[in-house]
Image 1 (cartoon, rainbow, N blue to C red):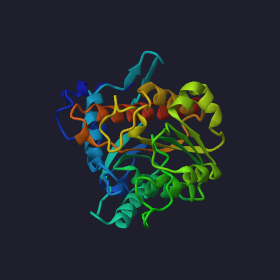
Image 2 (image 1 turned 90 degrees about the vertical axis):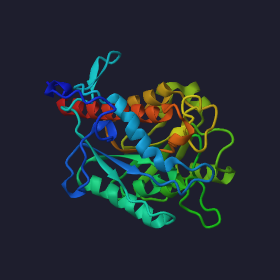
Image 3 (image 1 turned 120 degrees about the horizontal axis):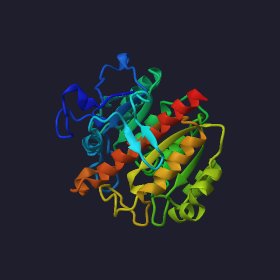
Image 4 (image 1 turned 60 degrees about the horizontal axis):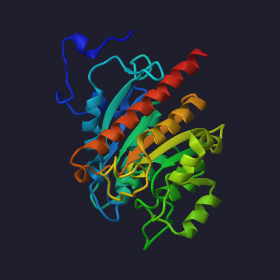
Length: 325
């Protein structure tokens, strides 16, 4: 049985020490990486079209995550009667940030892709903190040869723009770019609503690429079980979460807020149900578009950190249970 961290004699409160994700150990030598989960920052917001600031998302999420790092031996969920995030289930490190070259999107994307490839080579699951949603394109490209992968996408926007004025790698393009990759075999896109980033042609292209598009109202009408029935079986899953998929009432800290969004448990319960069904076969996660400057309360960053930590807990608990079967 794992012991509480504070039993070693150091309380290590959230406001003490280095600000890594959930106060995980640091591993910036990617050739020596040994962990189940590697948290990577991708602080690039050169793809934004309106309000920038998501470049500070990784720092904001890391700081918020210290709230959930009191040194306990795990996180007990009384509703599930499960201790999640125990050291027996999962080891996690913070590998720092991919280098971003200001104004050079291609070089920045190459650096993000390289970092994710190093994580995958080490056998760890990447959890990537954006940055705007453009970072998803190089992240998912790094999974080349590791398919078939179905993308689970939470967002207010479809992000299926092909090209505008020569721009192919902005934050309106990443799911379109992903759909062009051979290892991606489909998508379930949830939360897509009203005034959005795409036109009818983009929706038709997404459908033609095998995407199932659900609005917030669709998800609420179907319920978690109904949504799960629409997600194909027999593939691996990658989860990409744009924080603007949530309602601005709980996630105001983003560059493109859109009212009518998800509440916390609506997303969490879909993730947990999918994880249970696939026995934790989630190959990676990114969470993007947190822009702390627009939320002085910090609640958007806290939402992001809480959602990620719960998701990681679900995934590795299910993997541990699968090993016992």
